[in-house]
Length: 289
Image 1 (tube, rainbow, N blue to C red):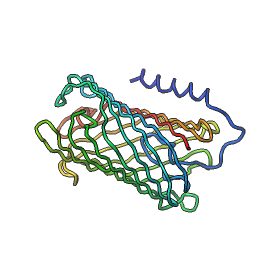
Image 2 (cartoon, helix red, strand yellow):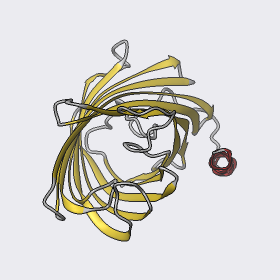
Image 3 (cartoon, rainbow, N blue to C red):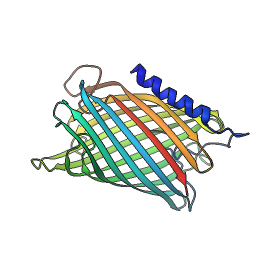
Image 4 (cartoon, one colour):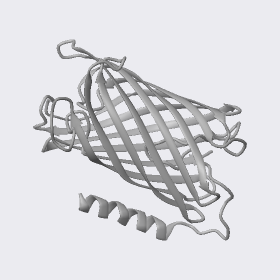
């Protein structure tokens, strides 16, 4: 655990040393991309187009070997005021050995496609806080956790809030999340339905004109059935986040989270490695074009 945290901060330190400095900080924040696992309320200006790559790694289940990596390529456009559309495609890599209830596999596949829609209801420059509603729809042929083939459909609904805590220095964000998912696997034709609710908080401070550092705290509860049926487990994740404005057109976000506490339904212990992973990390690079 300590080694992973040390490596994360080593990467952040190198990026911080190499990040370009400017004579004065930009006024305010653009929260569209500054967080790792959360979203901000900004959606961009009309006519903006962006290319983005997002790589998410998940490691650790049970004491066995579990590694899953997803790489998503996305195109974002802002066709109307306060409204953003994002289209994406994802490939995934799974390396699993000895995890209970998951078949051993080592594979690389095209996973699926996604559509992300966001609409900003309140602009924090004109209101006490920013408020955006988001819906990300995805259809997959590979299960993101087990790597098993099938048909998977889901939606992530997010209610996002953010507010400048100290003008031009500190920003805070809150996300409320609901994720219903449905899956039908090729092997055995088994169907599963699940849902997850969660709350996440992030805080960042400006340490250099183009560098933000902070952390994120996320809590999830998972249920069987899309309507929050039988309780399956819960987990709390915490970890650091760093954002770098590399140039006027390019940016980089790094985030790492460790499961600080968790518990599957009907079990004791301090971690939930049945429904969630021990570590999660994300790197996002984007460029305007």
